[in-house]
Amino acid sequence: MEKKQDILDYSADFDSIETWIFDLDNTLYPASSRLFDQVDRKITEFIMQALDLEWDEAYKTQKSYFRDYGTSMRGMMSVHGTAPEDYLTYVHDIDLSPIPASPALDSALAQLAGRKVIFTNGSTKHATNVTKKLGISHHFDGIFDIVDSHYTPKPDHRVYEKMIAAFDLDPRKSVMVEDMARNLVPAAALGMTTVWVRTESEWAREGSVGDHIHHIVDDLTDWLAALAAR
Image (tube, rainbow, N blue to C red; front, side):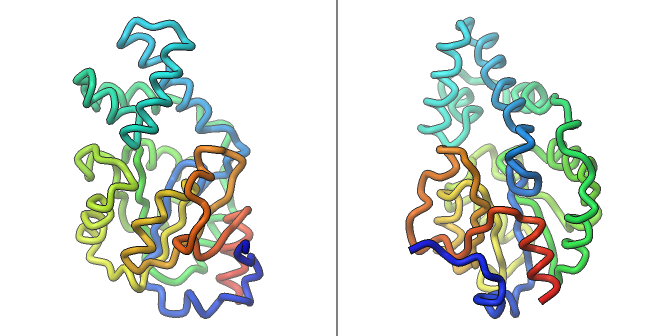
């Protein structure tokens, strides 16, 4: 049975929340902007150049590594010894114009009680660039990125434990908001309230069936605004 999106039905779930943990890509900005498509293309380009492959083969390699290692970067590091700094610099060199400033999201976050942090498989620089473009960077107390996790990506449970320690947060009083459904499995197991930002991506929908998803959201800004105004 699909979870309800009526804020009044579950507002009590958030009364004791102290910390909000947000994924970045396709979560704090809408997947419909296609911003992450640029990153996806840059990953394929990087693999093409690094391994001297044609586009189709590089793309297959990219997706194979993503599936087997959690991120394509981790696969490139493990199999080919790729320097992560070079990879991150290349793939996050993108045009941010598809995501204009979002006064509505800025307002919703301002009204949302509790600390707010970003937990991403990307880099801090990428997260900073994106949140500045959206006009929401001032709301976040910190960013836990792929470097902080020693390049081990979500959903490895050890990364969540490191993030919890880094921000000294109580998972039972925390919410994790994420577009990749499988990344919510460890969060729920640790006691967090989970919110899945549903998109059309087949990758993001993998692992979307189960009790680890507590709430489903289609428009994060509208949902946060409704929650803050309840």
